[in-house]
Length: 334
Image 1 (tube, one colour):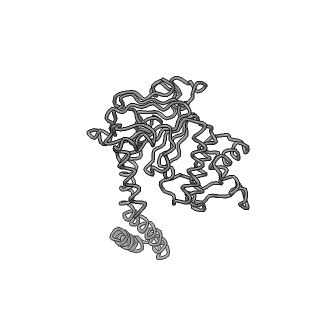
Image 2 (cartoon, one colour):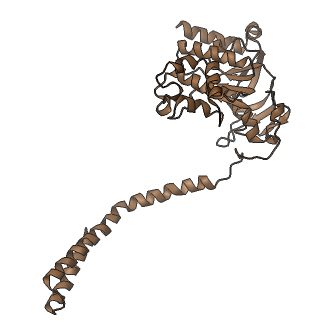
Image 3 (cartoon, rainbow, N blue to C red):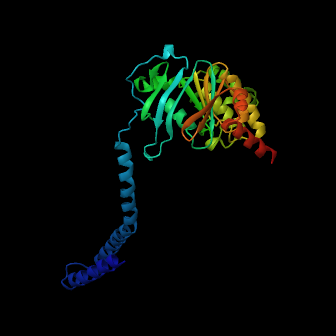
């Protein structure tokens, strides 16, 4: 406002002198006044947006730092071994130790070792923070172990072509992320270039084909923002179809039914049990009722493996797993 007033005062002062000297008339003075008034108002408005400019500069600095940062693991790196034709789903952990970069002093895994063999269903159970989901992340090579070795088909994950490694596995998480596209497009996202026949076969395998076919637009039905037009069980089955459309040899399930109600959980669990029969499956679960039929149950506690065996074998030991089952039984009773 001061800038505006000072400029107007200057125009009046100079304009009056020019009129007295006969250089301009009153009309020219008013034209000049209007022009400078609008110009000064625009200049004054710049002061209002200057804080926004400074905030934008600060925010952009962080964005450019993120863009310029070199990731320790390049997700599109094409180097390394590509043994996809030999991929059968054999995964091994050998004395693996790990801590997250943001908490290097907190050991999440303290030397775990286990094998997931072709066609077997392996369940990882234990309290929150014991290292179950971290093991799933290491198998995908989203992180690298600090020591020890994570192998796939006997080859360390660091030696794999990372794109080929991930092309042979699929993951279904607790909260499926669906995009604001059609059901068909969301399923096809799991395999770029998937044909309509492949999409429909995956939908049948995920037990959602009949539901989709009965919709007015079928596979062209939009799921809405974050899948908001579908129920929790329907969203999860679309996510399962998206994982199965790529026909993975290794299926990773990270709390895939934890966010569902009991009725939807049973439907989705039947789908997962069917899908697990044809491939190696690593399952992270808190609800122990969903993994009782697993070929092997591995019990985590504070970053270590304390027990392993089938459901009946672990119950007979009356150890950590037995206590977890007892606690969940009490919770269900109450």
